[in-house]
Length: 396
Image (cartoon, one colour):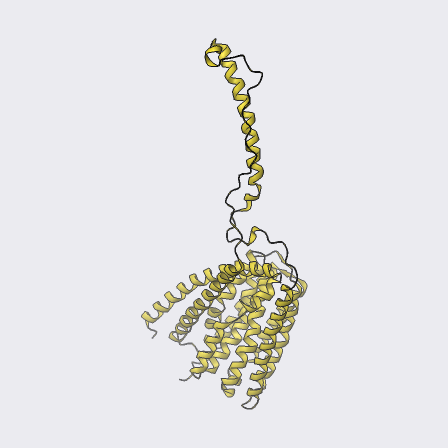
């Protein structure tokens, strides 16, 4: 029987983590786009090293390996790779009628397809001797990947950035400030005309009432004049664009919120799974992978809503490259080879590879909303098959 108190506590933690997750994803999307614009590089490249870094997955895998539970670690890696594409990326497509992707997106989706194929080949042929070579190779691939992204970002910063408008500011409510000067000048001219009309009106009333001399002494002027207002422009307090340091700090805060919320969600989801007597593999491929990929889902949704397809790709592709290189390398080096070979099925491996093929084709031809619907339905079908497999609970 599951503990009611433990279930309630972990459900509460899960919900609290979701709120923190939403905050982190919102800040992260906003400031990633601004930093990319300031650096004059594609948002895809910045996102690959930020939202594409699956540190929460690495923490979960490391904890599972420290508990001698290689099946949970492998299930989380495979399930998260599938969820990032079929669940997260598809959600972003649902909020866009049409998505066109830049050259960086096409390059790195091809890299993802190649690395996923290599990872699955190494996994199916893994043994106690080969695992050290395979693990070292994947970690070296991760270092090369990070170096290539950093190199592209560095080369992008050497070119002159585009004109930086007030869209960099943290507030979006200042769009009308650019017209304030013209409005103030028009208002000044209008005041002059109103003054003249008021003067004429006052003479007419005085004449009609017979009190012209008592109201104003001297001859009737041909035109009532008033000193012209100085044409000094009245400038409103327009917020100055925030510095790069400010945006980097806010981006870091958003990323930190994503990581903390991911840890809370992953830990609570894992405990819920064990309380419900699910096997380690099923927990990894379903509940745990769903929980740890929630940041990617939020980032993908916000990227779709705000029409940032580059960030959507960086979020998905960067996450999966991180998984199959660094996380996969750690899993091979410190995991049990016999458990790893028994910890997955050919069905899971095939779905993981087909997911990489699907996102590669979509980025090449352009994304459509119906594609997101098909991918999401495919992910639901995958979850159903995984749960219906009827695996028994692993022996402790």
